[in-house]
Structures are given as C-alpha cells and as structure tokens.
Amino acid sequence: MLQGPYGSLGDREKPLIRLPFTDFAVGTVLLALTGLIACIVISLMIHFDESTYTHCQVPNYLPSISASISLVPERYIWRFCIGLHSAPRFLVAAVYFCFYRGRFAKSFPDLALSGLALITAIVENVGLLLLTYVSSTETYSVHKNGFITFIASSLLHMLITCRLWQVIKKFSLNPEELVSFRWKVRLFVFNVSCCLIAAYFFRRHNKYCEPGIFHRVANPSQSFLLKDSSSLGLDI
Image (cartoon, rainbow, N blue to C red; front, side):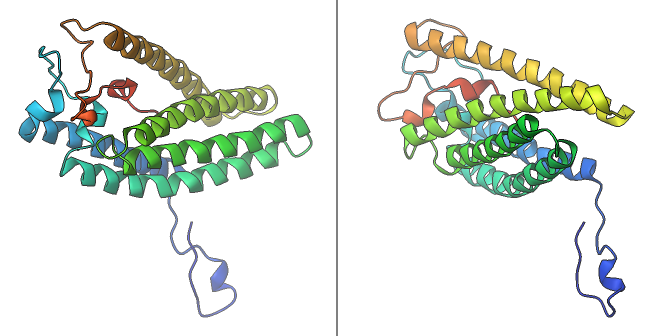
C-alpha cells in the first residue's frame, strides 16, 4: 500500500494504491521465471552451439542456466528481470519480519530466529544479484560463489521459515495460513531434493567425461560453458 500527498490531514490516511500481497508476490516471482524462460528460449534459437558446447564433443540438448544468462542479449534480459525482481524481495523480507515480530514479541528464541530469517533472506537476495550481475564469462569464481551463497542462504531461510510457521501453527492459524504453511514445507522438500540431485550431477560430470546428460566441462577459453548445479534450476 502506497500513500501520497492529499489536501487534508484526513485524506493522508487513505491509501493511494492498494495491492493484494498475493498478487504482489506472484508478480515478483513471474519476473524471474519469465526472464529465465526467455533466456533459455533465445539461447536455443540463436546461440544453440555456444550454449551447449562441451569440450568432450558429446551431444548436449539444453543449455545450462549459467550459459543461458551469460550470452548477449540474454544477459541483459536476465539482469533487467532480476533487477526488478530483487527490489520487492527486500520489501517482502521486511514485511515477514514485522509479521514474525508481532507474533513472537514475548518469545525471545523465536524472535531471534525471526531476525535470522531476515538476515538469510537479505543474503539470499544479495547472492542472486551477485551471480546475476557478475556472469561466468566475466569472473567465474565470483559467479560461482554468488550461486553458492544464494543456494545455501535460500535453503537455510526456508528451513527457518518452516520452523517459525510450525510454532505459529500450534497457537493460531487460519485456513489461509495453514495452506501457506503446507506449501512452504512442500517447496522446502522439493528444493532440497533438487539441490541434492544437482550436487550429484555436478560431481559426476566433473569426475567423469561420459556421453549423456552429465556433460558440461568448461574449455579454458569458454568458462561460461561450465555447467554448474544452477543448470537444474533456481529457489524464489
């Protein structure tokens, strides 16, 4: 809800714009999803060879995310979408912290956990911005560390969130909040599963040079083609 200048003092208390939180959250998520799909489609259409190249010279049918967002114009599309996507995420993190602070005002351990949830949400968003604006073609080590920071803080934030909502569920939970809690748990399990699978593929393609879906080892002159675990998806 945004407020702007009005003629009288009473008018100043009226909302200028009212936007449902659900619509705000869905719109924020769609920014990243739309950018990702656009980058992959463009890579397949005009940069197929560059985005699927492997030094082992084996077939590779889809580009990794890192490869897709490192080419031009995909790089700029991705940065534009993530730039718009990230600003609301900082706001959402603050809104959730205010919500938790109201619920756990008399419980210091849970209140401290709420603060940790805020910190991990901020670190997660910073990691996403880092891996976005420093592509693997520019400085691969920075891009990789940004990705690791993003994944680690994302999973920790989701774990803390599930714990906090489990506490909330014991005392007061309306039907809408119950649905939200269940989806949070499901998404956490889904994301952990994806990360474990990604870690397996990442380790295997580095250890073996074999035909199939495990390939994506970088040529020294083409570091942006390195397939990392981000090729299996990102956590919003």
